[in-house]
Image (cartoon, rainbow, N blue to C red):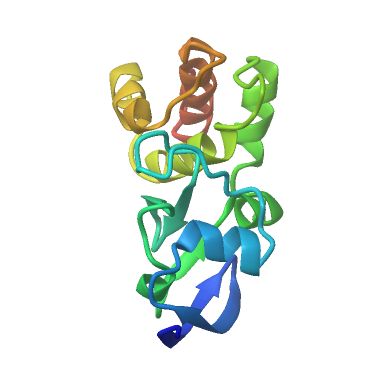
Length: 160
């Protein structure tokens, strides 16, 4: 027997209501119920950051959060961040700097960067610190940091 709970929240700017099992993780709800497969599942232990989405503007591990916890929240996935144009400059910089290779970690990294860039212009050390929860096996991070630093410079005035 399942323990269903009704939830209502904003997802990528649209209202969503659903009945979800109390034990269903947000990542599984997004991927399997709502078919938003840009949220990747990696370690399922909150270590790799591949499943990061924005919940009320904060980068959040969707593999550790239950779907019932987003009741009343605003959730943005990579699909929503892309459609809104909010991260278009980040995506262009990632391409220009070759900051992605296999792309598996990229949606989570972009969610982390989106949150980071809403504040002041971060330093390289602050960028690295913010990315410490995102695991990338391909790039070695240098190009990712370069791309985020480039966008930070453009968004917050002046060169990186």
